[in-house]
Length: 225
Image 1 (cartoon, rainbow, N blue to C red):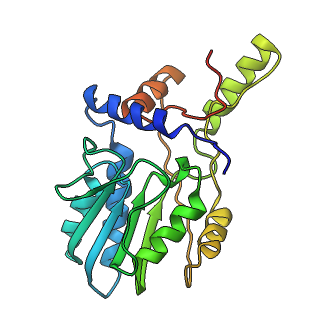
Image 2 (spheres, rainbow, N blue to C red; image 1 turned 135 degrees about the vertical axis):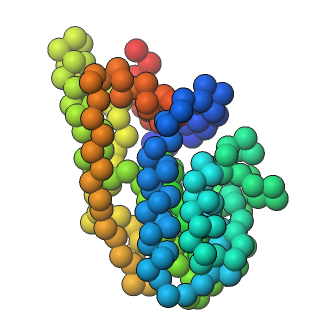
């Protein structure tokens, strides 16, 4: 399996961000969890047992509780210090998800699938953890995310060094997301996209927010300069 991401570095940056907490830096996680709650509100069924997979913050858990559609839920996080972890929850920092087969009615993964080295494999593992009529809901940054930052860094590095190295993650578009769900074996997969624009006065303000989220680049092939 190709190692696109340095997953240990990605985790260490998220843990470091916890100890340098910046109020409001989790706005994207909060917005995504709010969307999760809204989507659950439109579904006319209950989910007795759910699992949150690498959601990292506690926003997703609170969204499940507010929805009134979920009786109980488990958590799976990469580290016990992450706010998404709950007492009794499972811990796994690698690509293998220790989930029991056919156990859950609902599986949720928010803002993590874009930085795993085996997205199809993780989707397959979550599908297998679902009961036959189970539902998977996932969200991750898509095509166009940080495009201005990518272009600015590329232009600056080309001018200074005559070459360029990857500094911003590759992001999948909605068509690729749908194809991934099909490849993982989900029945009746649906993929959609939403544009959320955040404006900054400077690139440095954006980078401060990315650091506060623990979301700066952990590409294995990143430049060290």
